[in-house]
Image 1 (cartoon, helix red, strand yellow):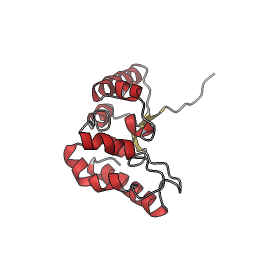
Image 2 (spheres, one colour):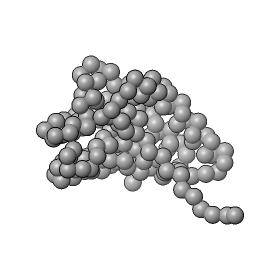
Image 3 (tube, rainbow, N blue to C red):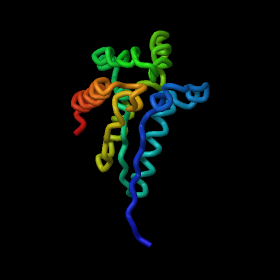
Length: 154
C-alpha cells in the first residue's frame, strides 16, 4: 500500500507544559538534551529520505539579545485569571533558563533545507478566554510573526 503521510514536530520544550512543570521536565528538557535529540531526529529523517514540519514555539528560539527585545511579552498574561507563564517567571527571576531557550535547535533544522519550519505561537499560551483576551492573543501571534521575521523564517 502506498500513501502519503505527514510528519509534524511540535517544538515546545518546557513551553508546552509551562503551567504544570514537574521535576522530570527539568531532567529531560535541558539545552544539551534538546540539541542531542534534534540532531538525531534530523539525521534519521535524512537517512530515510523523509521531510518534516518543525513547528517552533517562537520564544524558544530566541537568543539572549532577542529575549531582551521581546521581554515585555513574557508579562502579557500576568493580569489574566489563568497565568500560563507563572512558572516561567519563577525560573526567569532565578536565572535558571535551561530548557526554555535554545536558538541552536532552529539552526540544526535549517541544516536540512527539505524541512519546513512553522510557528507554534509565541510562548504556547492556550488561546482561550480564561488565559488570553482577544487583544492579548493578537499580540502573542504578532510577536511570533516578528520573531519569524527576525530569524528570517518565511
